[in-house]
Image (cartoon, rainbow, N blue to C red; front, side, top):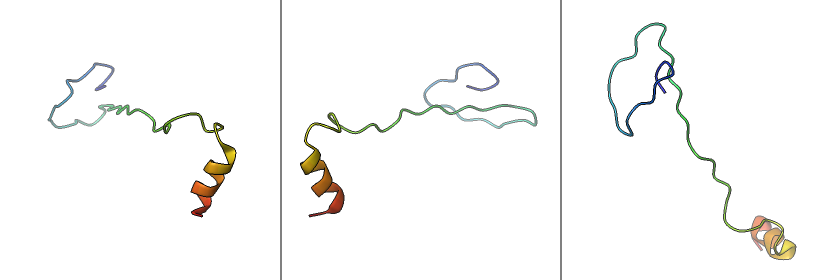
Length: 48
């Protein structure tokens, strides 16, 4: 968003003093339920 207005997916331009630019990106939640197999998750995390 530039000053509350949506921008196209690809845009270029110059910001002016007082402009407000908001960049929103999706989070990286991972794949699958984190509690599906606790032992496997623990070994993956510990690298064993």
